[in-house]
Image 1 (cartoon, rainbow, N blue to C red):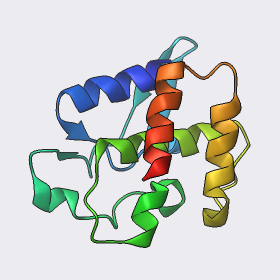
Image 2 (cartoon, helix red, strand yellow; image 1 turned 180 degrees about the vertical axis):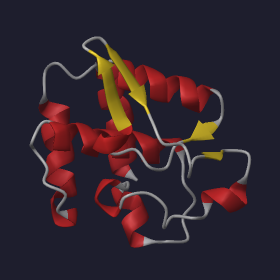
Image 3 (cartoon, one colour; image 1 turned 135 degrees about the vertical axis):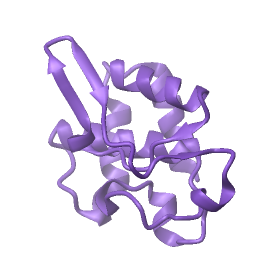
Length: 127
């Protein structure tokens, strides 16, 4: 999946997106997908930027960030947001904050989601 590859490459460069949501996943052609909108992204090397957990769309923010606004963003938070976005795109999630975990479980159960993505999403959910 191009979205997981793009996110892996971004993380390998030390960047956290922090605002992954369906409207930031663009399909340019039938076979070309890109991540968009990096205005709130930050570097993993800057702990002060990573503390701003009020950035990003609340409905697609990693569940672990909902409990404590002082937590720093981690790579796993982008993976959780991507999972919530996939769930929304697959009409399994309607933006209701209380339904995040069931939506993530539904995405993990899909047979066509790559195993690598499932592992990262499961790690993000455990936090």
